[in-house]
Amino acid sequence: MSAIVVVSYNSYPDLLRLLEGLRPDGTLTYAMLDFPPDEIVIVDNASTDGSRGLLQRLGEDEKITYIHNSRNEGYARALNQGIRAAKSDLIIASNADMEVVRPDWLEWILRVWEEPSKPCLMGQQLAWTKYDVPGIGRMPYLSGHLLIFDKKSIQDLGGFDEEFFLYSEDVELSWRAIVNKWPLIENRSIPLFHHA
Image (cartoon, rainbow, N blue to C red; front, top):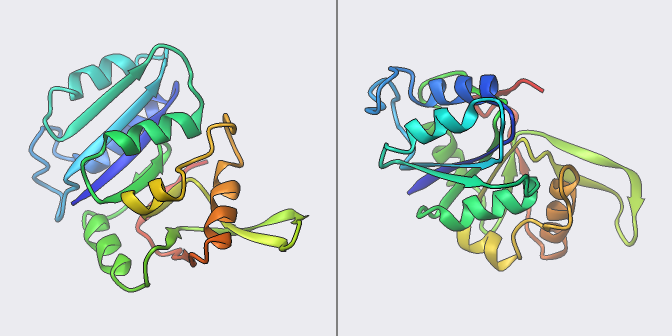
């Protein structure tokens, strides 16, 4: 089973574009996706731009879990909420400003996910820290705009560090993955586009 987990904060246009890509027929049937996700978990961090109304309407769909926070809890904490709420084993953590570019995107991800040994952290873009990390030097990390992992392993690793309100939580998670000898797997051809 697979879940896409999205954190939203005042990102109505981006979120609408992402959800239209996940449900392009405009209904609750997922009819036009070649391989729809088993569930979509959206955590909203007290948006004030109309996102909440959209998400409340979508929350009637049994495949969508909608969590509304009464205040902005920050990205890492909200993402951990979404991971805990997901029933699926495979988690695709996506920023709201991602766009689906082909209808078989999930089938494609599941195919490439089978290849590496587990546990691992997979993402769309590998980057390098600007400064040396003690004991490592310049450290590679996977950009947090799209990360793929299995739920139990990421929870065993401690999830995302909630001390990071916004930004750098991906660097810190990659560091813990490296320390625990997890491979960081970059795959730039994952068929989702990052608009940021």
